[in-house]
Length: 214
Image 1 (cartoon, one colour):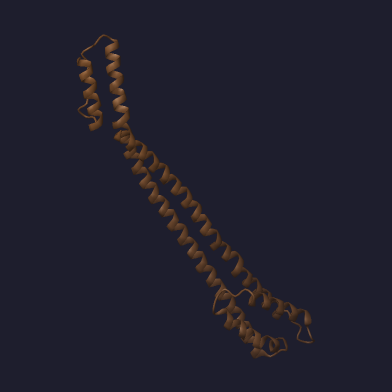
Image 2 (cartoon, rainbow, N blue to C red):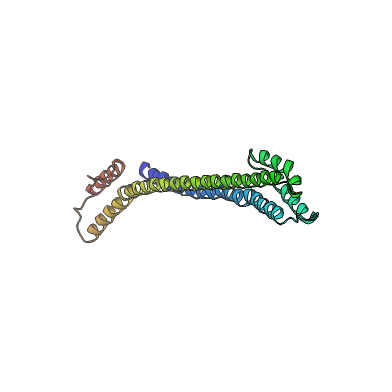
């Protein structure tokens, strides 16, 4: 019957929307996790390398050969070189590579260029972290509004389903109960009222009234 088919269809629609919201939320968190991981992993690794390079060059011993500070600097430089995430990083890393040996030997010009290149490298990665954070926030906001929009649709569908359930099932069942109750109490003139019922319910009640009339 069409009314019950509509109720069944509405039930499946509600189930489908709920599943869509659930999988949508899972997809959202799965997309946000890599974005946050990029912030914490790639750019943070470069910033740690920058800190180590600045620390090594600041604590170098100018009065004698300081292999330890130089080795620490080179290790940090190689770490930054192996973690390039921005195109402009290559330029600053090349500048550091050209000048850091002279900087460790006390050349003030080379030292200035090396420090400025390291600072520029830090600013570049910091800006990349801010952009990655902004993208993660945008993704989260978009997903939140998407889920909110789906919730509104789900609410509308539930209200329509509730109305269909009331008109196609609850009210007809109440009318059937009222007729049976009246006949059990001795009122054999009570008939099914179908003026406000859906078409198929009207047809059923009209047929039942004909049977009762006979």
